[in-house]
Length: 130
Image (cartoon, rainbow, N blue to C red; front, side, top):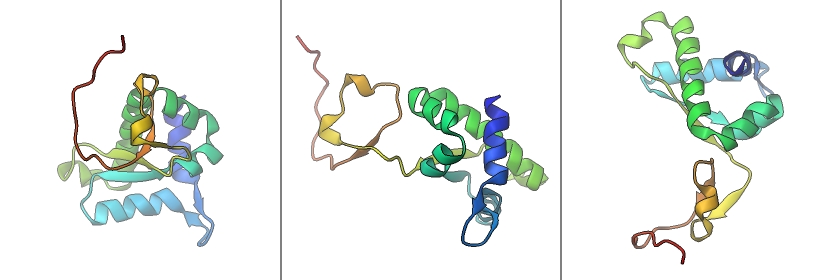
C-alpha cells in the first residue's frame, strides 16, 4: 500500500555521507526543534519509490494527506508524547526537477504538483478564455 511504501522510504533511506537513516534523523531534528514540518526530497523519493513520486505529482492533495498521516505515525512511534506538542505533521516536498515560470502556469496545472519560480508584482482576476 501507499502507507507502507512511504513508511519504508522514511525508515530506510540512508544518508550516503554518514551511512545513517536520513529521515529518522530529520524526524529527530524536527522534534528537537518542536516543529511540525518534515521536508522530503522529491529526488530521493523518485529514486527510492518512483511510483509514489509519480502519484504525488498527479494527485498531490490525496498523496500529501497520506504522507502526513504516515509521518505522524512514524513520529509518534519514535516520540510517543509528541502529539501533546503538535497534533499534525506536514510533509513538505522540495527539489522538484521541473521548474515552471509563474507566467507559464495554466489551467492544465490545476490539481497537480508544480514547482514555480517568479515574482508576483501585481495580481488580477482570472478571466475565462473565450
